[in-house]
Picture (tube, rainbow, N blue to C red):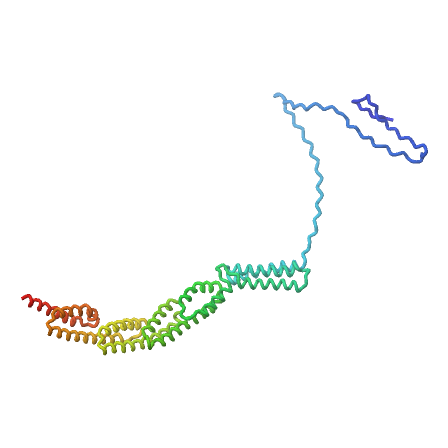
Length: 403
């Protein structure tokens, strides 16, 4: 048998492979397998460190560097097995198709309604997508009643979004109907309320063009209600206060003429103003004639000037010709003549009393009070002659007293 001797420790005995002895009483049994001898690591002295390569001399050629041995090729990694693709269920395919259809419907809706309706379209389609996705796919294990309930909920939310969600300009479908209802209920003659809502109504029509006819009809109805109420009120007050009736119609016409739909009621309003003008002219004649009959010359001049100015202005505004201002001017001239004649009687009475100072005061008072009226009626010369005579008598009396 061979032993294995350690060359560095030759004095140690080598391990001899001796087979184990047989069992004396049971020789038929095979002996136990020998134990594997643990190999002892060889003790090797460390080698000398490698010396750096010497540089070749100048007369010697440099040796070519040794080629590196090629690196052994690494074995390719085993490919990771790919999982087979999971096929979508039928309900998931339906949901994907529904999303595509909703996107197309959204683009069509924006083209039809306009870009400012983006919030309304977005939230309406979002509600439909939520309800149908839940009813078709998420709740696919539930009963059909539950799934249909989710779909109906999505449609209901979409209707609410289309009704209450405003556009980018802040106008919703609910507010549009509310503005039309408020205009229908606007009281006749409320011009401030009508003009304050004009800007919002224009914005409403620009956002919802289908409301243009409804808004225009409501505005026309309010104009007609306002004009009809004003005409009825003028007819009631015409007999008692014609000036108020005329002033109310003038003020209403001035306010309505700045509105957009004024031509619709212009003819009716002008016809009513003509009737009021004729009735007012008749009342002005009667009033001035009554004052002239009472010898109230100052009142004739004042009321005649008032009515003449008002009636002439109204006649020019409606394109009507009337002779009332000339008639009133003739009455004022007649009243001025009578007034001047009454002052002459006072002059003679004062002259008989030799009250020269009173005569001079009378002339000054008439010059101040009747100067403008004399210019209007064309009797400046007569008034000047009378006032000059009064002053001359006073001067002569003063000169006679000085003598």
